[in-house]
Image 1 (cartoon, one colour):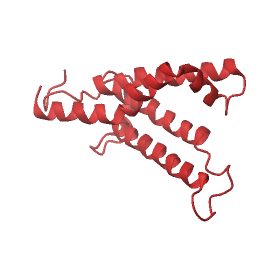
Image 2 (cartoon, rainbow, N blue to C red):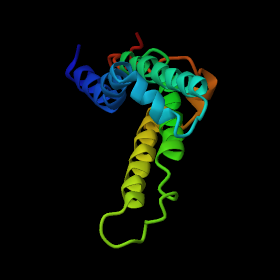
Image 3 (cartoon, rainbow, N blue to C red):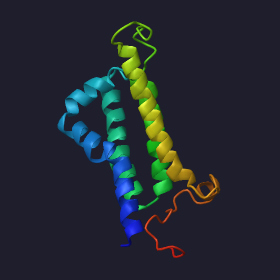
Length: 157
């Protein structure tokens, strides 16, 4: 693998590392706690468990797709949507009512987490649209195709 390929691999591992291994492993090791947290939004335990399992699947399989380059654009789009959904569902900074309070504020802490989720999602969207100026066209034309992140310049794998 070339130096560019190694750097690409490291960057892709870095962008997914929050999800795989850390968040996914936390969901597995602390499954009951994760279900309880999901129940804050999805009240029936069975629904919370199902939503949690969907999130776990996204964290594992979409992260692997981003790292390996297999349907990486689609995987990055799934993770971007997951980041936005978790921001809206779990980082509800508008709920505590203490955003403008002096001193420490639960709402402001949630606000920063909300923005971090959205920012990370935007980073994944960059994988979807690329940096060549072609925008969504290549993704929309072939959503399951790899972006060939480890191909030698001018050659697709």
